[in-house]
Image 1: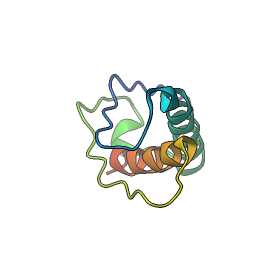
Image 2: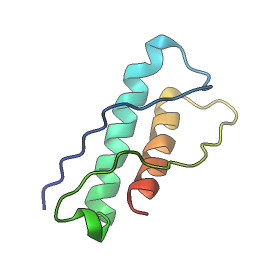
Image 3: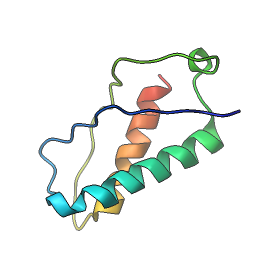
Length: 85
């Protein structure tokens, strides 16, 4: 199965990130979503095609010395759960 996922806009407000961290966060989100979709699949209603205007991603818990990659992985997991609701 091929999956084409397009995220038009990902708004991250209030995160302790510098502008230079954006590429690392983006790469980690993409990598984590790819891994989860490959291993866990896709919601049945999206398997034959479809779109969602938005995804209720839920909360992201910040703590300690999270790197941009850590945050990206957590964001990817949260988005995956939202996609598969």
